[in-house]
Image (cartoon, rainbow over all chains, first blue to last red; front, side, top):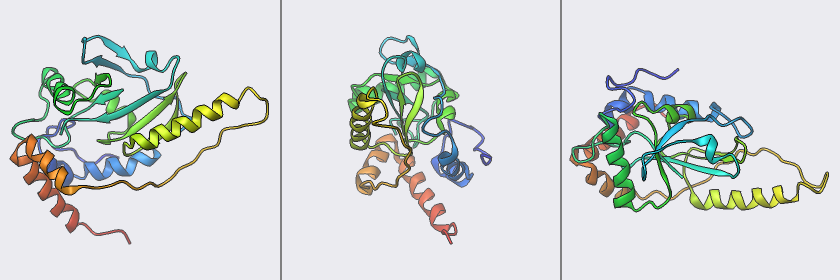
Length: 74
Length: 148
């Protein structure tokens, strides 16, 4: 179970409070047992930065391998 | 492709997302200041895709054509992904030869370089409080009981 998140939730404002809440440890602890090689990949609808169109991951993996790197600027 | 999530270390200059426009602006920084040339896809404000894949800040996944997960890592190493894909495609190319090749699963530990000073400089770009809050988090980590 994910520990109590800071009051601003997913888009936390302060990294130290996010760590203090235990959410970061909970997320890293859950990761090894969350989805495995061989499982169907979760689909999602995303916004393409360059033209604003909606893109589904399943369109991208339909006929080729898809490398997905997650991250942010900071 | 790059999947843009919440900001991991928000500060005064690059803050947390309060709207989807904020989120698009953060993704533009990644493209225009860091110079990421791959297509950048932006998750929704609530992080629906990020939640689905496990919420880590710098993870990488490879999804095989058709939609099965073929690679999962809690860190992004371009060299590791590339080496994996080269092996995977070589094996897959041999599969029409009946009985000569079959898949197996593996789970490994790898090591990465850590450059704390470069990381601190990047935190300063987000705003002074991003650096201060990371230092505060280091104190919290230090105060926690270690393994064993």
